[in-house]
Image (cartoon, rainbow, N blue to C red):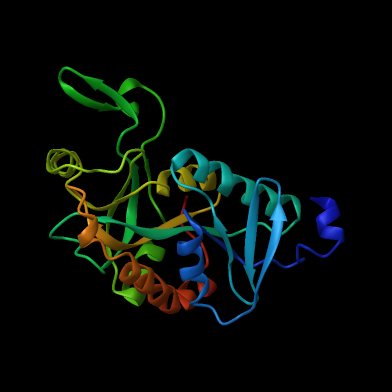
Length: 250
């Protein structure tokens, strides 16, 4: 890490925020919203795409565990270089709960909740917090959520993190009943939020809806449209992220 800094691979004034997506297609969709040149910087475990005059981006991997590890690696590298991030944004496409989050719409999390961390009992699911330990929800700064929603037209609400994507109507109904404010589900938000919390950095999650939560119908998915919506969203969101100053507790 020090050697890379000496070789100029890491700048002395890194961007204020890190954007973590699951896969390169999402990362590249976000990058298209920024006019600056992009260069790749390899740090331990991950590759950063650094946008001149914009954010650092990382394709953190699929699922909460890998996303947490990758985001933490980027956060640690920035801190060791003396250029810590002031904000982490988890971004990507995801499933939307009908009718609240239709295809192509945007959602911004005011709660990032892991939906399947706990115990399944004869009486139903118990979140890990009901077992007396752990965390199941992270809350992004309220002022940032409001500003992001106003800038992009995204609907604020709960975004669920799951390790197994919902593929049946019964599972969708179960999640909606347990989480009545849920608008969308993804696989990385909680992991990224856990990494951010460990580093004392606030987090935001924004998703463009590519499919409905429920039975898997690949013919109905609109991945290209959702990636386009993600690019458009970050074009509107960039001024908010670049000017935002954290003044609420994490």
